[in-house]
Image 1 (cartoon, each protein chain N blue to C red):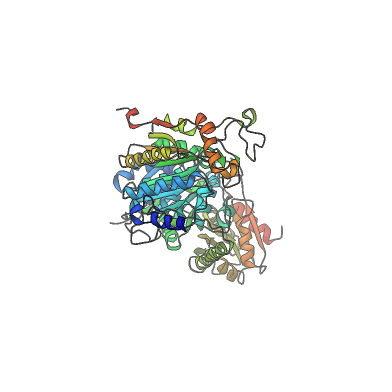
Image 2: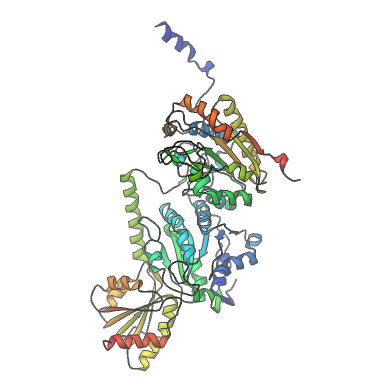
Length: 262
Length: 356
């Protein structure tokens, strides 16, 4: 009884430090507990709201776990075919150059079937933001090997671990797009700790603001977890990400406006 | 402003007509025999005049998905290609049909299968009229038989696409794309400022968010949507059939042919008549919707029909279904990029009459 009274004491408007972001809808998220998508969605929704861009935003969702992203953030959306989000975003941005246009894609979508669209959109310097969720696995189809699956990492289609002599090496798409002259800001972040969440939010805010400059593509990779398909708890997943994913995919800016030729 | 008379290739006429129709965007990828369309647009630089976007994509896949993006914003957008490139676009076309987006696709057909030839053919009839991509859908398919119609059908294609929120296709061929004829070009239209209520243009506080998608995991909801498409296609079948009749009044034998083959058959009608055979020609202008009702009526008047196509026999299946056994229906075709000569078509009709 004393405990219940204690909670009541705490749940008061003046103690409120965190609440549902305005642009997140009331639809039940389709993501598993501990998955990075929820956090990444929230960051994007917060920034669109804070920057006053709800009426200016057109998002493109991919094929993959975030295929239903349009159910979760209250802006206009287009659902792209698998891998084609950057081409769809190109069509939108070319015809609506005043709007804030972004894609949100997983590793299979962006770095396997959509490799050509990703590279060419970045190379043309389309004034769009690409958010790249890299969890090293195909989530929606049930844990198959992705282009970003680590060497030795187990998946349903690499059950003995990724053998690079047979299956090739993981593709570092962010490194590739960073060398293309069309990109303006390229960074790799994560959301596995509160500090990293804040850094990712800062990176995405910058990318959103840069789009107004019409200087080229902004590309934000978020190294992410997939507890269900990694077959780990959310806490184990965050630890595994830190010990395995980040050494292979080191965090930080790869290209900033300061790196651009004058 | 008055119409303007020009001597142009069919491909150039498509490009010029797109600018004049007030198109908002063109996304394409080079392929013979239709590369003049992209070349003409790049030369004309409409982006400096009307603001029309012209972009060379990295692939046909990218081009059709750029069209998806632009069409989802309610814009008048188009792409053009030729057979192998149109095959690559099929995924995107299916998504566009599934998301009910208006757009214009031009196929300047060459012979196939595979890489085939760069010469004219009509072997993409099945692909254009029966689906092409996956799922239950139809395109509105217009078949031009002249450079004039290449130009006119750009405007008509956009009009029908927006009327029905459905992709429209101009099914042309390498002959019509490459040949030069005089063409009366329509006066320039302003680009439309009207925004369809379903378009993604950024969500104002006054409306719900707009979502362009073809996804529905609930089978019941998906079936309701499929049914809605069926009703739309039935309405199109009811209202949009277009065809042309040539010397059909007293015809005993009927050629059925579209596009280049129809041009050939006009001459074949004359040759046959000179030999005392009362031939006529029915030229479908819309391939979907197909003029089935008219062909069924014609079957009460003629003794036989001959479907003439630059293919192994594709449209003939629709002629057979339309006629439903009332009279014999045959096919005559040349393939591999060969255009049949009028006398060999007339000769073939004669041999069918005599039972040869």
